[in-house]
Length: 117
Image 1 (tube, rainbow, N blue to C red):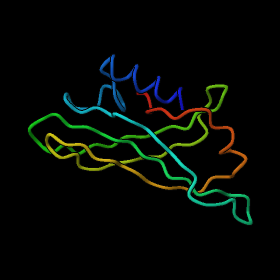
Image 2 (tube, rainbow, N blue to C red; image 1 turned 180 degrees about the horizontal axis):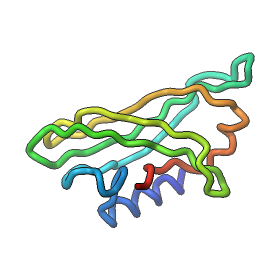
Image 3 (cartoon, rainbow, N blue to C red; image 1 turned 90 degrees about the horizontal axis):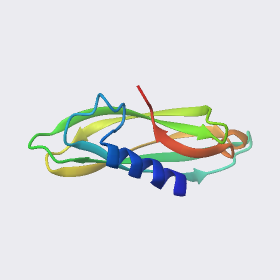
Image 4 (spheres, rainbow, N blue to C red; image 1 turned 180 degrees about the vertical axis):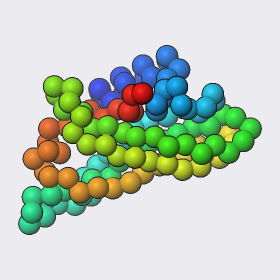
């Protein structure tokens, strides 16, 4: 969890976001989070939910597409989760989705980050 907070803090302080060059000015990903919803099932899979809270400080609604990456301790990507939605003007919105993932793979996830360009 500390790693996620640190990565987000670095992103916010440096002005980068999801696909850093692609986010419009005034739109920032404030927080990333995940949790296990269920499982493991008989096949050894867990159902996880992934969420990104996105803030829009502009005067217009903004459509965004981002991808969250699950990263293991060796800095390898083990899962991509695409998220999209309309962020209201002067508002924030949580974008989320869920996926099934082998519990063995889930346990290797060390951190979540925004996909880099």
